[in-house]
Length: 532
Image (tube, rainbow, N blue to C red; front, side):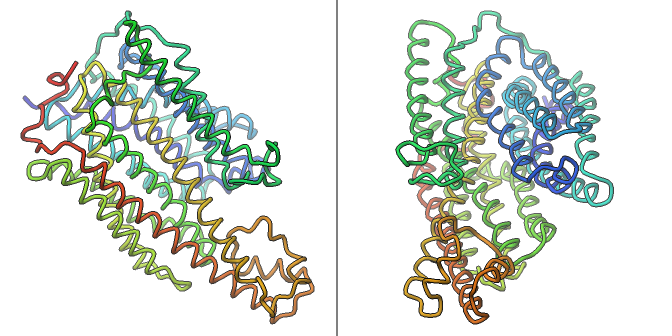
C-alpha cells in the first residue's frame, strides 16, 4: 500500500526552513551590515552561532524526540523557529539578530532528528528511500530558492522580507503537520546530562578550533588570536581537547549502555563496518562540498574580481544538479549496490575537482566552471542521499532520532572542518608562494618589502594590491612585479588546493568499499526489520 505524499511535504518544508535560513545569511550580508552598522564579521558570527548550536545539541534533540515523540517535538520547534524568525525579521540591532540565529540553531538541533523519525514513522520500503532522497533535495532546493528570492528581495526591497517568508512558512508547516502520523513517546528515556555537556563541549571546541585555524594561526599565534599558549595559537589545542572530550564521551556512553541506562547516542547505529563507512563517506563528501563552496567564490570574486551575482550564477548549476541527483539516484537502487554507487560518486567528485584544477586560469571562463560543478554536483547529490539512506535502513525505527542526530553532527562538523581546512590550506600555500616569489627578487628590494605586512598574507585582488603598494615608495615597475607575483601565487595555491581535494575524494573510495554490497531488492524493506 502506497501512503500519501502530503506528510512528506510537511517534513521537506521543515528541512527547507533550516536550509533557507542559513543560506539566506550570506546573501543578506551587505544589507545587514548597512542596517546595523557593524562589520561583516559580526554578521558572519550569526552563521557560526547557528551551526555550533545545531552541532552541539543535536544529540540532545534526538533524545527529546524519543522521550516526547517526534511529532510533538516537531511542532514545538517549528513554532520556536517561527518565533525566532519574527525576532530576526524585526531585529533593530545586531545583538538581537545573533540571538535569533542562536534560537534557530537550538530549534534546528531538535528538528533535524525529528525529520528522520517522522520519515521512519510515515513511510516504508521504496517510499522510505524516496523520502530520504527528497529530504536531500529539499536542502539543495532551499539553497537555490534562498539565492533567488533573497537576491531579488535584497536588491529591490531589503534583506528582512527574506526572513519574513520563513514566518509564513512556519505556519504552513504547522498546518500541514496535522497530516503526520502521531508517534508515541517513551517516558522511560532519560536525558544523559553528563553526555550532553561532554558532546556539546567536544563538538563546539572542534568546530571553533577549525573555524579559527586561519585567523588565529595553525602554529604560531597570530595577532588576531584572543590569547596564546607560550606563543602558540589556541586553535590546535582547542581541536585536540575537543577530540579528547569526544573519546571521553564515547567511553561514558559505553558505560551507560553496559549499566542499562539510556545513552545520549545509541552506539549501535555505528557498530557495524558498513555504518561506520557511511559516516566516513558522509563526512568526506560534505567536507568536500564545503571546501568547494569556499574556493569557487574565492576565485571568482577575488581572483577574477567579479560580483557575488556572478558567483551565484556559476554555483546555480551545482545546486540544481545536487537537487535532481539526490532525487534520481534512487532509480539506480534497482541495478547497482550502495558500494558501487558510492565508488562511482567519489570518482565523479575526484574527476570534477581534477578538471577544475586544470581549467583554473586567470581568465577562467564560466562554462568550464559550470561543467566541473555539474559533474561534482552529480557525485555529491548522489552520495549524500545514498549514505544517509544506508544509515536509515541499517537501524530500527526506535533509533531513527539517533540516526538523525548522527547525520546532523556529521554534516555540521564536516562543513566547519571542510571550510576551515580549505581556507587554511590555500592561504598557507599562498603565503609560501608569495614569500618564495619575492625572496631575492631584484625587482622588489628589501626596503620595499619592509613597507608591506608579510605576516598576514591573504587573497586580495590585483586592484586592492595596487592600492596597498601605492602607499609605499614602490615604483610603477615594482608595483607591476608585485602584482605578477601575487597573481601567480594565487593561481598556484588554488590549483594545489583543488588537487588536494581531488586526492581526498579518491582516498574516500576506500571506506566507500565497505558500504553494503547488496542491491535494494535484497535490502530490508523498512526500519522495523533491522537489528534491535
